[in-house]
Image (cartoon, rainbow, N blue to C red; front, side, top):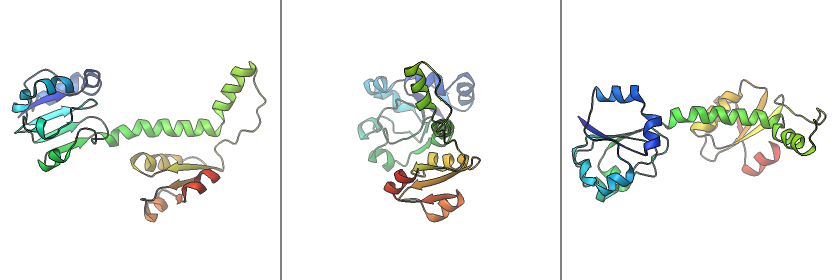
Length: 203
């Protein structure tokens, strides 16, 4: 099996480190250096030998013209999140297998989101601005904290569901607006579904 790396150079170094490249090389013949989207578009004939592509941020858009140069392409392994920016109808028509790291990438996003929610409940940004402006510490009053507070989430997708799940370890009430979420999923997450206006009014 033969393959190529097609992605931005900085993404290549970030996603595919020495260990990952070595593991890939055990099963795949990487027959050319890593290519950027611009490089592969300028020299699409390089795709002729590719059975698989390893990619990430900066993948070239796989339209019919580019795919015509990749007759043997069977799979694309995308080491980042959404695949929408490079997939096309022509891509799907070829039945090429594609994988994505969106679920793994969601983890640090979830952790950062929960951290920001907790900081906001403690009015961190308000007090940071007040100290910077007044150059003195304000009295420790008016901090709601997490206990008994209501947190509103917009959408219960891959990230929203994990945020809701992580918030269960804190004493907060979680409400969410998501017209596509089912009642069963919300109940499992201990989340109350509501309209968007109500979410902003209550949280």
